[in-house]
Length: 111
Length: 123
Image (cartoon, rainbow over all chains, first blue to last red; front, top):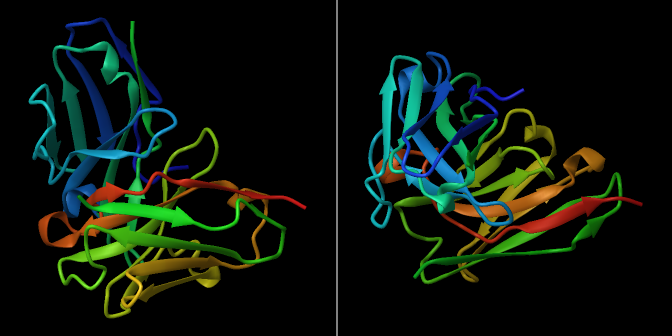
């Protein structure tokens, strides 16, 4: 059971816009920032969005993030076949002694 | 170009200690801007944070694993290491080392990852 809640799957056709949600609580998303990671199966995760809505250099502006209260969203516009991957949200949780918590991941399928 | 490389046995027996080392190249574990961490991913499942260390030796550990974990840093060899005691089959996973960009985004911002190494726990 992951601390952050994501839908297990999402899908879209090329060119479409897809959003993936991430729900948490006041001890994690509500009290800090959210990061999103992309993992192509068989490879290491890669940072996609940090600090809710910032893109590292090299990440296309088709990817965007937002946060409101204890929830966050990742949006992918102009969907492409190589966007097919697993997407994870992550945040710092300051309950107990502190912990990095992840969502369970969302498998994105490009139809 | 920063690179991280995990190394260690691919097979560990139940009840024994899993030991992994991450060698950092193109950067320094002594940098004051970063923590260095371990994460894992059981086959077919999601990511789990294990713990992190600063060059000074300051650590953060996943509370659910804390009693079994030791993370250390060797600044002279530019490496950091993970020991996980009393392993069971539930510890079978791909283990990743990674860098935390704490100045930019705190410990949840992992901006560089190793390729990962599969460790199986079996007799």
